[in-house]
Length: 511
Image: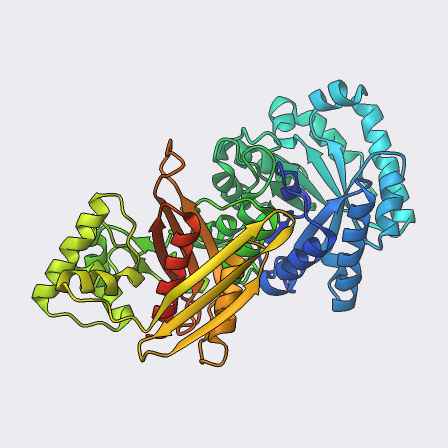
């Protein structure tokens, strides 16, 4: 790829630094899946896929990625962290077939003397010897200056002399981390100005951590000061408060810095959802760009302003990321919020009925009841005091679970024309068995079954065992590509609440 003057490289380190998130460990198959998404769909420039000498499982995982990347012609975009360890990391990385080592060195004299127990000169010499050996093994070399920002702030001379120690050696770039996440933009700008003034012919990356929630501001400061590349992780995975989130780095570099990247923005939400599922780390609902609710307007005034002229929209338009704008229903909802949801459902109400439905939505919201668009037909029915004309109803069901056996479910479905169908199945859990039985019952009825995207259970804090449970299920909208629908069920039994939410989904799909 031809690099433009204002082009910033993106290295994604979800599979290395992101895996330092407590409780996160990707299997080899999961690592390969994520790497493929990052390189072929999201189109980051480089991926750091692991650390040398961690385990046999790590070796298996990185080797599978490298084999795939070699076949796809993108092997040079794959990098592995190595250590100054007398050539052991170099041999491990070369043995896995990888061509690039990111050599971790101490970027601050404090780390050098206290953690390694070495003088700077001893560490410089050992690192240079490691680079020479890596060259002999045919590897390309990048240098990580661990704690480099603090190291320069304390003594720029230490970092200056370290970089000079590699004169004449084929180091591609120096990676400068804010390892403790305790820097701020002014310091980042100052450090990168020092580096680029002292070494105008060398390439530098910035690697940010988010302990003070400053990583994105620091990333922008580094790019504005001349950094050639930045490091990030999907969903900001990483140790402690995490790393620079990939999704915010990309949009801030573009919108606020005027920089170009090769990232396909419409793939960010997909990558986020995959990493969330495989890591088991739920993303904050309000996470910029990829959070569940970031393109949802709650206030009726905002919905009205959007309707009249996108008055409450910024450059982060949902369509830019393959998403859609939603308007929440609740106690703050207004006429425009209701109108937009009714329009999406294809429902037309006269002004008087619409006013009553809005009043009911506000009343439910005031009682802390969640209201989804798919609840509107039921609310209309309630306001009119007429039975809901359902297309399909879960008429009977039984779900049994016992120790040592897979849960089983039997279900009978009744259609509005009086027809009934039944199905039985077993599953990995009670709800899974119910859904499989439901699919068997509806087989041949032309139901386009949507993909389940998220399943959330909410119980009041401090609630007793008989507390009311709210199950909220997010589905793909089979009638509108790229859109989603949320259905909600409420009951003291979680499984019953989930069944209610699923029944609502069926009526929406068959509407």
